Image (cartoon, rainbow, N blue to C red; front, side, top):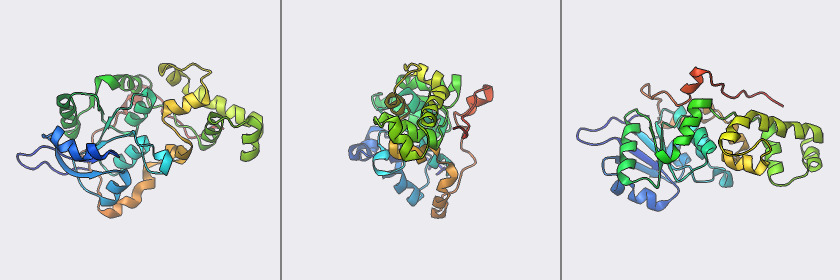
Length: 267
């Protein structure tokens, strides 16, 4: 989503951050950017349909807790409507950040970066470039090397979440109407899909379900969100949001070099 820069002014940005202080002080910290809107949630922005050169998005808000769009799912929703997205966060989980890049974010800016470095990065992304903070570079290299972290099926997520919370094989099998062996196979499928990604994140092949869930930035309420597709958010087009042809290619392009994006099949 583009809102053309006004003569003599910098790129227009919208801030989506659950922190009131960040929303209130952003324009003072980064004076080269023109803040045209601030929102606590992505839903507020989508309902408003405001145009801008860049959405600066914090991903630390746990959407799983209240059902709000957050993280990679929020990025996909924004990208689907033509927005450029730059993540602005203290997040350090490499797989979570890799998912954000795969979802279409073209910038990762750390809240611990200097104001000068942050402003330069925002300007770069707003004008169609890619900017990755040094502290988050590992995620960029991971996506370049391996492509996007595989998506999990709903059935796999159900088992992952249940085991992460200590539910017994017999209990979750009875609840899901499957055998304990089938449930076990689904979790093994998760580990198989993520083997190399988990290794890059410092987790072994026997990583616990809780460790896998945390590394990916998933929670029990985000099962459907992890599987959500951009088309699910088409209702927001009625607010006057129009996709922009100038949107740069997403970081998903490393797949052109042989990286295989996740299939949606599986046990």
